[in-house]
Length: 288
Image (cartoon, rainbow, N blue to C red):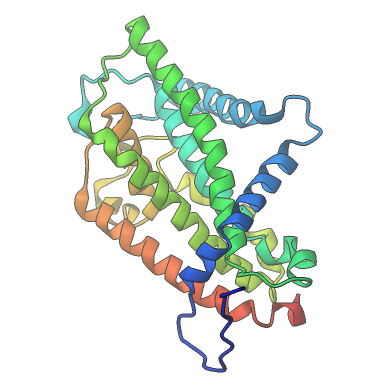
């Protein structure tokens, strides 16, 4: 006997988020994660090794161009003077953080347009798809983070750095969660808007690239003039990237006030995204 009950209601809620229903479809989330990961590397010679090659070569380019030629500072705080942190590790931390965030944003932003064929045939909670993106991108992040840990161990053993693992490392899971939620929030806002405004598809990739250079990925926070620092730290990814480096490398310092603001921005963006997404999902087949 099937005890499941489906309730159909005409009442419109301002914030229509059914977490119980999402949990019910957790197996479907797993299937989408598997589909996304397999399809991404299917028929490629190197397969998942691309998850390592891309950030590795990006880090090498950043190290040569921004570190050696442009000689941009890799200090996030004047308090880290005397702490020897190889620029390679500095840039790799920033790159894998940005790769995870931008991957979540771009993939979630393609939810409706990229999956119109599936969404028009069968019912399931539409938020299942952007949630699955967060987990499929997380697999890439774990692969890249493992590579980062190997390089950190190499530099420590070689004696070319004096960084030490501290208790701050417990912040890493929270930072990864925040990156995923922030990327998903912006992504589903874009996804909801692109059902009517296709120009956003072209604009998002360009905007994300510019956003990267407004975030301390290719340079340290000390490069920013003091009079602009408060405004610059309002960028939520600024505090995520610098806190990530601080937690893992001991590079920089922790600014709890601005980190709290970054979480506030994350929650607001995610709430707006879910609100728009759940509104648009009811009629997107008429406009897509």
